Length: 302
Image (tube, rainbow, N blue to C red; front, top):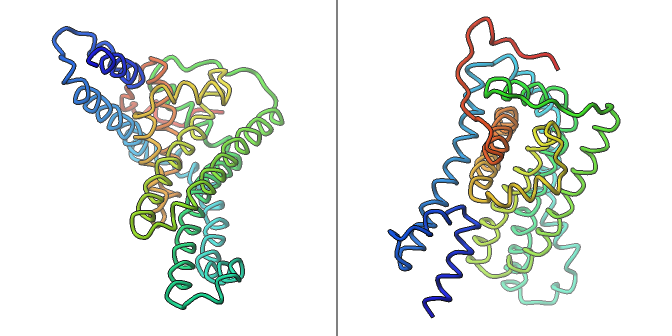
């Protein structure tokens, strides 16, 4: 039994990058869970730290960040209008979609439709955040490439991006965006039945929506940095999945900031910078960004 538990702990440890700690003779099998939890928490906080470094660029490179906020304003206004419409219309949509509930007792009918409306709104928020990320990155691709380039320049050893045409980049972003949005829709559909469980189901849907939403956002945000390193979407997913706690630290932080008033506009440029640092970190590239001197603080040319 102990051997089985030990092998299971080794597998989980390898996933959380704690294998070198658990392999030490100083750690007993009973301490495996505590070691893995501590390491996962440290990695999660490291992901939040990457986002914090991105937010710091509002102080050290404000002009560049303001430029990056412009596409976010445009897309946020459009998607915000859609979410507001959904909020005012969801009850009517639920009533139209559930005519079979008309004959139910009013308390049961109202409770059922209320749970369905809340679940639809939670799913709409997740899909809205993911679509906002995808569309904003497409609209503001040149601006966010400049932010990524600035982060790479400050952290050192910026990669030489492959020479590709503008249309190739557009179709790459469109293809990757679709491959990110479709799984988000599927996750929302799978979480829908869980929303019918009173109280607990709603809380579970909210938490799981944030986790999956954070994952999708983190994957999409690393697109510019990954493309500069010749990584495909599949390769980025594989790399980030191997560093899941750190990836979720960044992704959840961005997801929650996107839910705040004016949060998407303020956080989007910082999220791109933080995602660049995340990808650098998991690829064992330098991530320290010393504050540039006055003569070096101008935004780089694309």
